[in-house]
Length: 589
Image 1 (cartoon, rainbow, N blue to C red):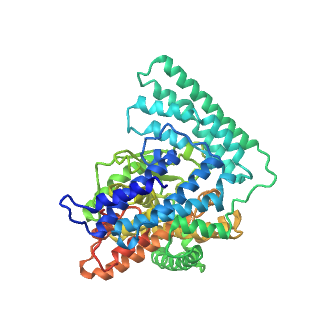
Image 2 (cartoon, rainbow, N blue to C red):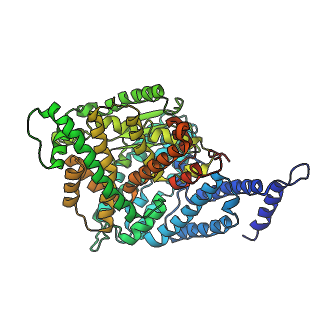
Image 3 (spheres, one colour):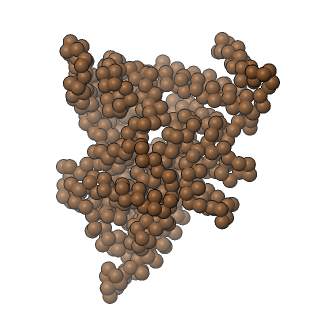
């Protein structure tokens, strides 16, 4: 560090002086210096976490696989301390709006990293920490460099796989059974990336036969190591496994750093309980109006929840066939684009590809649909809409799933995952001048925007304001609310599977297959399920306050585009700027 200090001072002096000898304003000096610091911060981070670097499109360290042990953890902790010292040199009050957001996001990331390594210690009990197949798949599937170059990086990276998994076995102490099972499934299903896909890709290159032979031999050896690790996990004797429940103290800590909300997890849970009651009221009113249309003179149940459930069950019968699920999604996307353009809700970038694909095996078992976006360093890469397969499902399970994703919900799902939800937001995020906001993107803002986008579309006439569509959206919105209630109740309390499934089927009107899937998800993740409601609630509150502030000058498009212009920053930071008295710089440096 002593060697770095004089260099830092020289940088400040260079920034402070113009060519004509005059002095730059202090604010510009601070912002220029901070922008330079951000680059150094990221360069240092990628050396320590090359897998993350690969996933965000920074490919300098693609061939490196860091061995997970006490030394690598110590290096990361030392990194956080050095960066905290560097960050302390800047006064957030002299930075631009965009840089001040970055400052706070870097600070949060450093705190979160220390907390994760010193308090959470997931590396001891979550075997999924050691699933590296995703980074290999990224090298293979993304076209950021010639195939031969990518395959050689892949090959070099595989060299560390035996040492990596040998060390992983030493680090795992008392794994959570549910996480162990999930990891075994993902590794077993995903190892084909190394065992088969790599070999298939080699055939498309002009790499010499002798070199290919070496590469294939290493790939097979690497695949064997991964399969052996999966077998070791499956057969591991674990008399006192850790519970998958995080516990209240760790939960609040993880919520603080991952959600970055203006409140606590307990406060969000309380708000979700109240929101659930409100939604039940709205849904009951719609069902009373719709009842004669679907049930004629049949008496309405006295229990309002039973009435809502009966109406939803009737509407849910309208759905696609199992083998038409992905095709229906593909047909929906152009319709969403047309509606948004007709209503002038937000500017869309048609040049950024959206590829709908079957969910890769190494990602399976957590969510039925998801988006994988290109990193900020690889802005022209594909965005993938991952769709879970129904192949091999029993007719009963498939029917339950498709009733959940009926013709109404399927449309809302595509709004959420694709346009103008995740896909659109992440395209905007990659246009932000700030790499920090993309790299350290806030999950609650990202998920919250997708939920907000659903409501925004319906408010502007999507679905022709049909009460059936609104009823189904309220049901879908209940999912976000109940995600928070279930996640908090499970991880800080004692809600079990039966109670969870009963709650979701009765009060969230979910199909049994969906409810059971949510139980599995809550048993292999924590806090992430609160991000939907946390972000949505803060965006709605901001939208309403912003609309009140602008009055007649407010437009939907201007709010949407200005909000997204700040990248994937926490909503509470965006709110400070959008409701502030001084003009915003719209995320510009």
